[in-house]
Length: 394
Image (cartoon, rainbow, N blue to C red; front, side, top):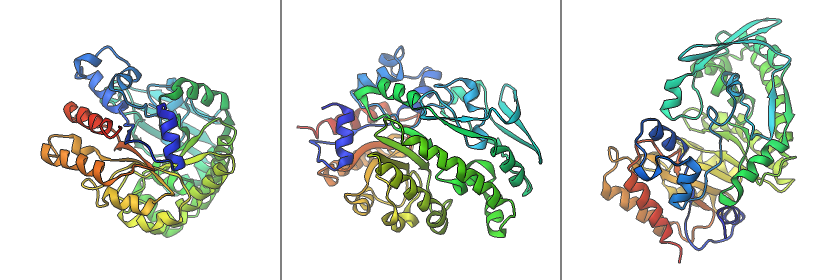
């Protein structure tokens, strides 16, 4: 059975012969390649070749936004929108008046609308590429004053979502049976998390939400229209799994916010996808202690990048108990245990032993390192983890 088949059977509830290990290695690979610290046998290999040489499944949940697409596809990153040839849709800014200015360190985009201008900046250039990261961070948010909500809503009202199922299908064919080619919907789970994540500084957004800023509902309604178009574009793809929503944390997306603004969109997406035989994956990476009771009201199928204790307060066994047979865990290994600076060898091996012993019979579990394999991960520990998982297969 190939990796793709094994993963889909796990999601469907079948009990595997042993632990399936599909870690995300792109940031580890990019950073070590840039600083020439890859293990010698990998120096001339692509990421796909490294994964194959290690005997692993290929992790293909989110793309490398800044390396796998034309530069123009990240122009609107600071508005929370991305394009990529592998996506099942494209975000069309053709009717929007904007101009782009690049420097050695930043990408600036200025949008012109009927109600005024919106300016954004994100990190750019050689330092960004050499860092290994896959997405630029925002250095100037679109919404700086409450009046910008209406300005941005008018600009985004001109944006259209164009379904591109053929683009996704080509990506799926390229990944083949090495893993599940997850179709990308959005990193934000609906309009309010979109604004929180990308458009407004977090503390200012909280004040605006509490003060009921007049322009906030206008922008929310505009974004809701775009999100409905995005979800509709997912239904026409050949995807088995779709990612929608990411990065939940009980301090940043506290339970009242999560229940009011995220769960309804998660469940709307789940119902639409389930209706056409697809699974919903959401990226739960974060401190989820205060959110654990809310997961009972969620209808998603896969919790991606589950980060347990000792990096957070929730043990992996507690996730497994709460998720039961409804939700598949994709994750379960905190990244800090791969770092010799954070975790002793004894504690690392004890954690691996406990996972192997306590997670049997391994149904609804795809082991991975949450959020990603860190660039400074000890390669000996990577190898140990791979071999420990391999030994669970008779």
